[in-house]
Image (cartoon, rainbow, N blue to C red; front, side):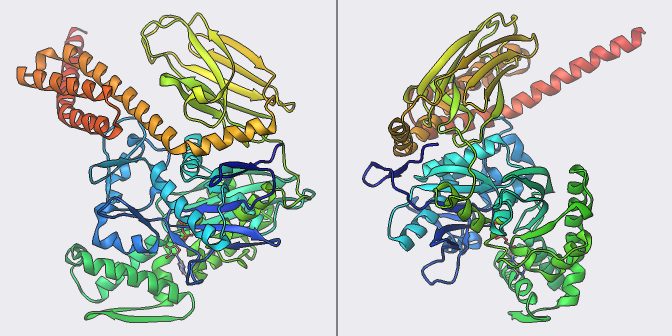
Length: 623
Ligand code: ADP
Ligand code: MG
């Protein structure tokens, strides 16, 4: 496959090898690593002490963004403008995060829809992709300072359970930060690479990666064979981690000091100080048996024995998840060759002991658990840079492949750098009632608008039976065989209507052309992303305008005249904003109309239910 690198500053394409960086984009902390003279290292801050960059953003008064330790200090001082745990929001819809909305100290817009979630800071809306891009930019800057050169190519890790949308969002964030993301790698895969497992194509192993971070727990069972990593199962809890130990300690101190819990927690300054003290105590207990400090007149004291007693049930929970993971992989503890420890919380001796006990073997903990994933990403990056010639690289797709969707947007079905052969599918639907035909146009490239990408072919799926818009389920499947030939199939699943084409010219681009397309995609990342956000906001707004119209007609009987005219007015105002080109204005107008109509919709729903129930009663009486 072609190897190209791009100098963003000069806008030139270089064919020489350039360092590729590895990034661990974590929920709590992020790191960047690279390989120097055959050794992979993490990059530290200016003091040379800290490699971890807290994944926290602070929005200053002038809307500029501070990332990392400085932002972390603002958590307690200015929560509304301090954004943490962005990773939890990546690729999620409003509906997905509704359940844990109260977990965030900042405003996650809370409408009950399928569209992607946004965060509101001041009067601006930010997507998780934009926010993650800020963290990536900070990491990029850090390594550029260290190398005294620009870097443009990266490998980024994600949890093994991340779905397509979450992976795509991570890629987009990289692009927005000015990085050409060569590959998205699973965190457990990176961890095992860091321990040197999987580097020898001859070896065959089954391993468990146990990752206990700040707020999440993941366990993965991997099989490594012929240099290929297969995830046999994953399990875990997205709300279980080091934070839980901190909370337990705070509760314990409140108890031994005979304080009122509500009052203490309500004192934001005190409770934040206690939380920080708890983390300090937890860490120091990993080295010593006792901890004792004061906050004002409060005695913050604990022994390792007491701490372990408090922590035991939480660690036991992680063991239960390990059990499930083994069961899903249809394996027993005897089938596991190695257990790898990842994440800051695995420094706790209790954790190591309980995990070793369960798997009946000592755990691999010789590497710094904070750095394992980043180091593995750095190794993978070095392989992709072509510096480790003895490692087999499987054939990959050089550019993303996808289809055109509403508004001329590119929807990627197979991302670039996917291993081939590969098969991937997505479902779409119609946008007009009774639509009988659907045109499928296939494109190759990294830009958000298809007009900037290369068209590979098109065909029409004919004979979709008449259905209301949104009802047909049209599956588009891309298959690339081992020779790199792409076949695209479209099938309406309710009626089994089917159509397909074969595209042979997939690798017809020269290296130069390919490099130019990649360069363009990075150069235009920001404007592309803005255009996409605007088009998406317009589509969404258009749908709201249409559904509001329908709603008014269907529920004319139960709305007051005032409500009707107010709703119609708001819909009109929203329609007006669609003509403009400011996504924030459109988003705001959507917020306003949603807020106004939600109680009306609720009332309409209750009314319809009560009518339905009445109908049922009549039937019951008759029978
Ligand atoms: P993530 O992968 O979620 O970004 P990390 O792997 O960086 O998170 O883990 C962060 C967590 O590790 C925090 O809860 C922190 O308190 C905890 N941690 C770090 N060092 C220690 C230690 N010595 N003992 C116990 N917990 C620790
Ligand atoms: Mg992590």
